[in-house]
Image (cartoon, rainbow, N blue to C red; front, top):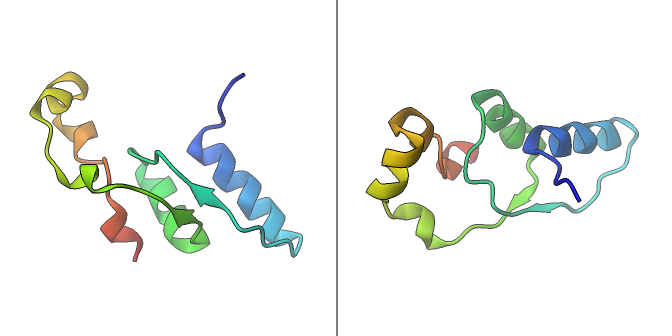
Length: 80
């Protein structure tokens, strides 16, 4: 089964809200969000669950996915 992308989830949530439906939505594993999706997360305000692991810098992961992408991980502070 294919998993929906964050953008698809935000599109669905936005569409539901435009119809006056406001589901309680919790997102998990939102490690990396595109800048445009980050702004939509802040605007739509779904509940996002995370763990403290996102506060630890993992150099091995950074080397694999490169610094630019790594710096887009776990940016929850921008959502407040």
